[in-house]
Length: 145
Image (cartoon, rainbow, N blue to C red; front, side):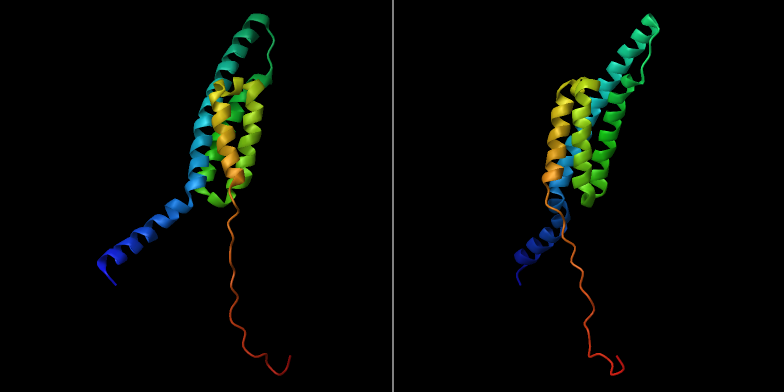
């Protein structure tokens, strides 16, 4: 075996976990970035709601929904990076939070909605990981069974 082949195989072996996680890495990064915009939009709407509550003496917890949606989106994106097997359900959570962000966080200034929706869609479209379980080899059965 030549040195070139050995080096190529070792590099491929080292990069395999990174390249295999490419989709969940991209989905998680886009979801976290979109979640930051959604949380910022939710914060702006919450600030506006606080001013309106002071002026008109009316308050509503609905002003916090956008901020909470942004924080849940950021957590979902971080979990996509930490637990790639759970990327599909977390992508669905990110898509729901993206839709919720439209009326409650200005859609994260539209950019947050787009980034979160794309990240969630990539995570949902990712094929599930197949886990192969091999059983121990079976010998001949004992005569008493």
